[in-house]
Image 1 (tube, rainbow, N blue to C red):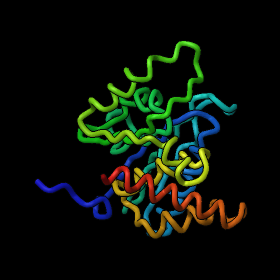
Image 2 (cartoon, rainbow, N blue to C red):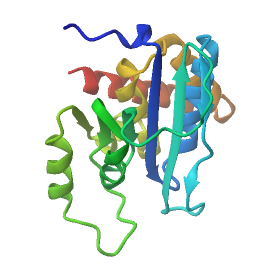
Image 3 (cartoon, helix red, strand yellow):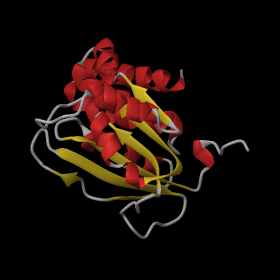
Image 4 (cartoon, helix red, strand yellow):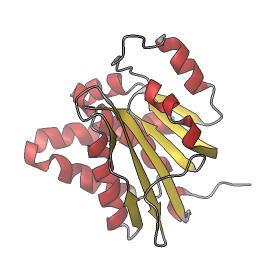
Length: 200
């Protein structure tokens, strides 16, 4: 059976994961804004986790062509886990639906003293039935800023979101407009590099 194109599915439940300081709120802003631009209904649970830099952070996003009544993604129902940190991707696997996809950065953020061996974490991710692991650190540097890793990961997820690429790009521009055109262009390049990596 041919899978439905992302832009024709009736709904999509997404878990965003990472740690404080990695730009999870920025990803959520772009996805939320693009969903409204595309005429979708959405619910976003408040970001859960430690407020300080380095604490685990997660957010639930629910997109639909019909009204949504709960803002939390039930366990076993997430269509997509998008993580800016590989260990955090593994932490939320219990939320993943059968046939769901995991898109994760390969770059660890070692915020705990007993962080597991990175190769083992990446092997677990790559062994999942449907996963994409992206070297966001390398691609962000190629785009012009190591701080653009979150937008690399947004780009990597973009082919699998029920959102139009023009709407996503519009709100990447909105997000960074106040910081100047060079920062906007860096993040647009980061998005493009992430999208290309996921599609390769």
